[in-house]
Length: 475
Image 1 (cartoon, rainbow, N blue to C red):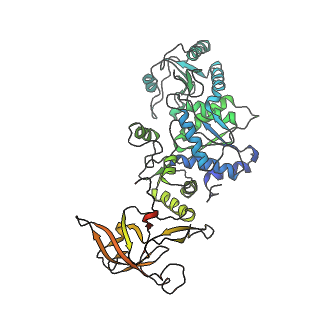
Image 2: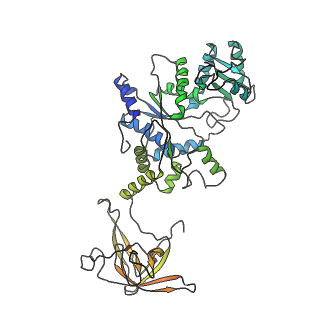
Image 3: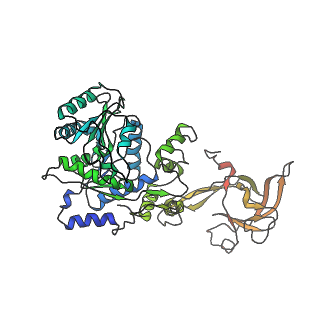
């Protein structure tokens, strides 16, 4: 279950209301239905955490269904990446499904619609059909093909399926209501011709169902109880229900579509189309570039599954579109890493520090906590010697009273080690400091219990022993 679940969000209220109205709890089933046309991003994490979180809370199965109805944009690479991201976030699906699993059933139901006089084949240009649909304030104009005979529609649809026509020459449309105030109900397209190989079905099909025809019917086949979509699909709900009306059997559970607000993040591109442009134009190294807001990019940047689940919980589920500040995401990773990350020391911009009174050649192992926030995290050993690297910005030859790091004549503590005092510097021909020479109080080692070891100084610096230092990958 996600970490900070809010049982009062409206999605939970819908489910609880249905259970109170008599829906058996063992009929609950949810689904996450991504289209495999790109990698998932932080916005998709909201839907992942919502659906799989509901499954965990109600002990209900959650299907992973790939909406693979557009072979022009979909690839197996994206399928594999999506599965990997969901697993990495800590979720498991009950059944792996594909809309393409239902191509034959969807086709057969489309035939039934034609036979009932509720669908027809239209051969007009797309621009003409768009004009005929009218506007939200004017009613549409019926297609001249709307009243073709059932026999003619069946024949044309069979020829579409057989590959007799070119792409864009014919579509199958539902016959609903050209005067409906909902533009989506004005004879929407059910099938279009696409002569492209599908990543699963190959060249078996050259007609492919549209999203609206596929969505609800797939929910029905899988017996999904609650189909949660983002807000842009709210106008589609009427069409979702109309399509279900055409095939619904009282003996089966009828899915219910409900909508929630999409997750938007400040200063962040959330469009898969625009992210794809960045990848294809080589502006980034790939979908998992650490600068990308994809789940795989965040993973490479150092985000943890727990931090993303926490972010989804804190962001909440809303009925209205809004923008979540990216600082909340950053807070979640800081909080998680602070509790879980093993502490190590690294120096990004090193300058050499020599402790002149530390015994030549001596190396000692100092004990450091793995995580000071977790008493059970244990400790590790850190090698210490008389020649170290510290951060260049942690030293100034001269500094005011508000500079609490190392400066000439003042003391600081080396973390888990000794108190040192800067005595002099060595510079190269350009005046750049190449070495800081210090002395130490050899009785001041941390943790020894001596009076010197408990003496307080205002600054503590991290460091690495030069002879034991390992270069980071980026350097």
